[in-house]
Structure formats: C-alpha cells, structure tokens
Length: 122
Length: 271
Image (tube, rainbow over the protein chains, first blue to last red):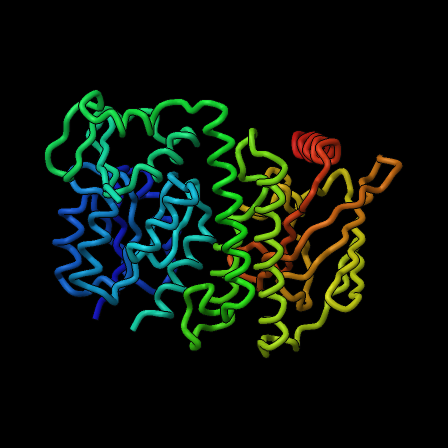
C-alpha cells in the first residue's frame, strides 16, 4: 500500500522545495495547490501526513486543518508558514497541527518533522 | 472571541483567527497586503467596512507596543510556572511512547519560540529576560529528561582538533580554536549559525540537550579569546551530511561579540 506525504501550498516553488526535502524518505510524495485538491487527494486513503501552508486561495490552511481534523482525526498535519508569531503558532497548534515549521525551512527540519509525525501516527 | 478571515491582493485567505492573532502578525510586519476581510469566511468586503480589523492591522502607537509586550511577558511567566510542574512529555504534547529522537526534535521545535534573538528590535529588556527564562526553563526540563533517557551512551567522545570539552556536573566548559580557513561550526547548521547566535560543534560523544555551556573561543589572528554563554539545544547523529555534533544557542551575547563573530565569519567565507 502506498504511503503518501501530501504537500499543500499554493506556491509551486515551495511545493518543489518541499518535495526536494523529502526525496529519499521511504514515502510517496504528492502535492496540490489548494484545499479543494487536498481534500480530494486525502479522500483516496493513502495519505499518511500533510504539510500545509496557512495562507491559500479560497479555503485557508486553518480551515483545511479544521476540516481534516474532523474527517481524518489521526492524520498528522505539519503547518509550514512564514506567519510565525506566537499567537499564530498557538492557534495552529490549538486547531490540531502536530508541528509548526517556519519558512524559510531547512531540509533537515522538514525530514525530522515528518519522521516524528509518522512515528506518532496511530 | 470573534473570528475573522482576511485576504490579500491575490485572494489568498488567512483564517479563522482572532483579532489578537491579526494584531500580532501585523505588528511583526507579516500582513502587509491585506485588502479584504470577512466575519464568516464566505463574504469578503473591503477593510473599511470592518473598523476593528482595520485597527488591528494599523501601525501601533508606542503605548500599544509596550502594553502588548507586557502581555507577552505575563504569558511567558505563566508558561514558565506551568512548565515547571507539568510532566515534560505532556509539555511537549507527546505520548509516553515517543522515541528519544522525537522528543529531541519536538524540544528543539518548541525551544525556537523562546529564542531571544527572534524578538523584534524594539523588545524591552524585560521581555528579553522573560523569553530567556522560558528558554532556560525548557532547557532544564530537557536536561532532566536526558538524564533518565537511556539514549546512546555507547559512542566514544571523538577527539576533534581545536575542541576541548570538560563537564562540571550539569555544566559544560568548552574551548574552541577557530582557524581563519575553517569557520564551518558557525555556518553549517541551518538554525544554529552565527546568523542566529548559534554554533554547531563537531563531536562524536553524547552531550545532553539543555546543558549549560561556557564557550571560550579563540579566533585565529585575534589576540583575546571571547567568552560566551549558552545552552546545548540540538544534537545529531551522523545524518544527512551535517555530521555528528551538538548545537549551542548563545544567550546574553554582547553586541560587540556578535558583530565581531559575524564579521570574522563573513571574511572567512568570502575568501
């Protein structure tokens, strides 16, 4: 069964960067540019972790996070954002984010965050 | 508490968030392009229709800045009080089954919130102290965890040229000799580099996270060694090309030492 890490970010460059960070890990990678695409992709059943931007067109990252927490409560979501103020980090964590990574990120941070998230998944 | 959505000129949406979240993000210069807002996330209107949102996004007056910083100090103090009594894994939001690697990664992730150098330039000394207190409280919790965690104590402390370590209880005295042609310990780690008041020391042996460190650094070509204080905040096995070693976050770094080190590293790397 495929185990897919899904990257959700409206910026194509960031999506490519995150893919590069995770190449070599024992997972499949997929990416989408918006929340609608993310919900459709998660619905296929093989997504084991989501990397999520906060600011996106139509549906925001926090809204998607809330929706995913209802539909897939065990699915770990790692928020990756440049909006890294104290209250924003608290808000994302309160709404169910497993971890909050700041942009710009380093490949090691991203790999470690995904590894940790997967270790703790049910 | 009312929740809001805001969107920028490219119709990228943030929300639902409170006015406090918006205020703090705007104060940090992170919301410069907000054009419209919505109380329900569906119907967006120009900011002028929502004076409370407009106010949250406006540049703040000095008195507001001080009031917000005082609030931040109170929050940090409250966090320290609760952190001292809360079980460490609960504080990190981790289950008992979490591995040592996950605990360390989560500790590092949380600790970054309390880096004093992440504060804005206008942060008061009291806010810097509160931030540092939280940093130290979390580091102390980590030391206690490291004592209990069986971990990998089998590695041998590798003798590395120019690096001397001496443990005194929970404290580490570290002497470094930095050559002008190799300043990699100040540049190799993404978070713990001279840019962020940090360094990463190549070392083969175990060093508990949270350990207090006194670092004496002799820079080649510079007559007087610099004395620095910090905490060990990261440790790595030999993965992803970073090499084995431990990372130090420097605290209470005098401006003159910071400026000297940055200039030294900049000169060395431009050669």
